[in-house]
Image 1 (spheres, rainbow, N blue to C red):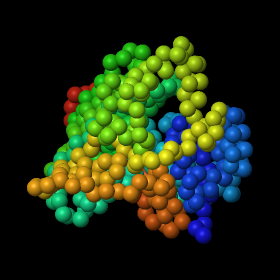
Image 2: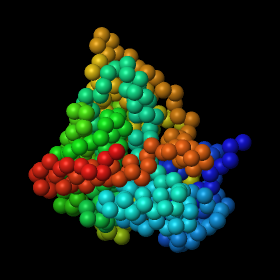
Image 3: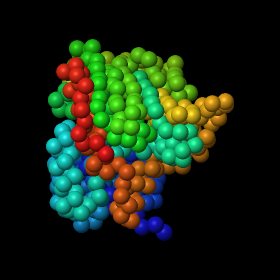
Length: 392
């Protein structure tokens, strides 16, 4: 039997609910502790997992039964929680974005090195098998070098229930911090070259949701390749249409029945308090783990349309494989459906902690991605191309 990794969770909100089906289905993970300010979430976790619960994150980090910590607290708390975990010798998987400044990221990396613990940043969609398989196909050399990458995603992100800070860019709100991290990770994974500069624009055109709801960016890489990234969270066009109506989490969607759902649901919230309550209803606590159980017939997770243009083919990751558009024919490199959703996250975390394998999504990786997200905001504000410094 594989020895399970004893995992503690800081933050039982929406990010945790998306990882919950993975943690409960994978025998390599044992959920042994959690901390959250909401008493109902703590009580539910203790009951369902027979685990310890804490109101305070530091108490969880100090628990000798915890080997690693999954930090899924709001963005602004990541740096303090990573430092706390490192101080107590716990390995860390911290949600994206890693932090809100490159200085904070560097301090988190330094704390992990000093404590000799593994620091991973994720989940992001660059863990998803279709992108990892595309990367392996590129590395095989069969299609030549990557010359251009196109990434495009249109969602309803801005109209899902939000806390006030999630609509305040200065506190890590908006689509750049929360969604660009996914796209940037995927593009960097496939390019396999250091990004050198970025030119970007952002969109903010709903005064009631006064933060960035869209962006368009161009990234230049040191080998001469380049990437185009476009994202909109304004809940009109939905790019799942390009993915056979397979949703971001691999679920099959009802295109007609779900259209406009986010905006309609949000209209029921007539105050900030009511919107926060709606958000909490989508988090662990009021509902238990069965409410977040992965459905049947899932495909792989994805993050919209991605095309890697190589010298001898275009490669398009899909929820069920990788489409290859060659010089004379096209074909699908099929992938088996996932037995456990997002199992690739546990693969990397478990190997890093239990076998000492250097993680791909390391602290340094997270720093590079966060720098590009910040550069998108800076370029949009100044109207200038931004040179990058902290790339790997």
